[in-house]
Image 1 (cartoon, rainbow, N blue to C red):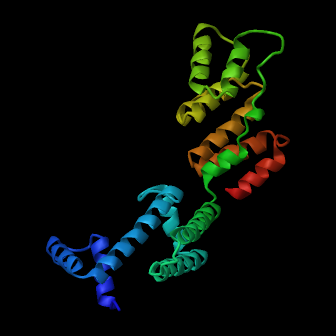
Image 2 (spheres, one colour; image 1 turned 120 degrees about the horizontal axis):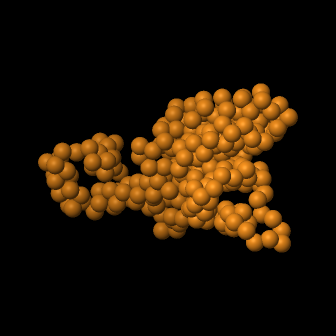
Image 3 (tube, one colour; image 1 turned 90 degrees about the vertical axis):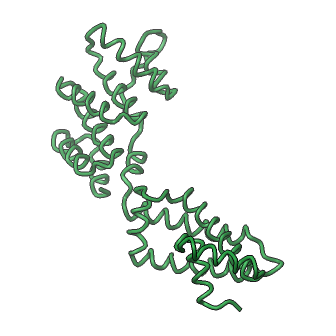
Amino acid sequence: MMDDVLRLKIEEYLGNQMTDKEKRAFEQEIAADDELQREVNLQREIILHLKGIYVDKVGNKGSEENKKLKAFFNSEEGKTIEESLLEVRNLYKEKARSPKFKLWRVVAAILVLILAIAGSVNYLTKEPTSLYAKYYNNKDLPSIIKRDTQNQWNEIGTLFIAKEYENCIAKIEGFLEKEVTNNYEVYLYLAMSYTEINKTDKGVKVLDELLDKKTLYENKALWFKGLIYLKEEEIAKAKETFKELKRKFPKYKTAIIEKLLKEL
C-alpha cells in the first residue's frame, strides 16, 4: 500500500511543485519502483482527462469563466458539486486497478459534473452574453426587402440574413458615402452587422447617430443599443438604456423589458 507521504510527493511532482533536484531524485525512485510508476501514471492520466474536459467545457486559466468558476466553488452549491467530483476521482483511482475498468464511464461521469458546474456558473452569474443571445432576434429589425423588386435594399437585407455581415457593412457604408437617405432602418442593419462581427463600439456609434436623427426608429435603436451593452457585459449601461427605453416608449416590449431588467 502507498502511504500518504508518497502520494503527496506524487501530487507535488505532477503539479510541478518540486525543485529540479527533488524532481530528479523522485524520478529515480519512480524508475526503480513498478508500483510507484503505475501510481504516477494513473494520477497523470486523471489530471489529463480532468484538465482536457475542464478547458473544453469551462474555460482556460485566467479567463472570465475561470474566475466565475472559482467564485462558484465558494458557494454552498459549488462545494457540494466539488465533493461529488472528488468522489468520482476516488472512484476512478479505485476502479482503474480492476481489469474490468472502463475509462469512458468515469470520464462520462466527470463530464456530467463539469457540465453541471458550467451550467450553474452561468445561472448564478446571469451571464450577460447569454442574455444577449436570449433576447436578440433579427426579426425585430424592420424589413427592407421588397417583393418583386431588385434594388440595393433587397441586397442589403439578403446579405444580412445570409450572415455576410462584412459584405453587408461594405454595401451600406458605400451607399451612405454617396447619398443621404431617409430609409433610416438601414442604420439598424449597419449597427447590428458591426455587433455580429464583435465591433460593438462601432455598432453603438451608429445607433447614437440614428438616435440623434429623432426618427421613428428611436425605440428600436435604444433596444438594440441595450443589447449591445449586454453583449459587452456593460451591465450598468444596459440597465440605463433599457430604463430609458421603458420611460420613453412604455408600450414597446413592455413585458420583455421588465423581465430582462429583473434578470440583470
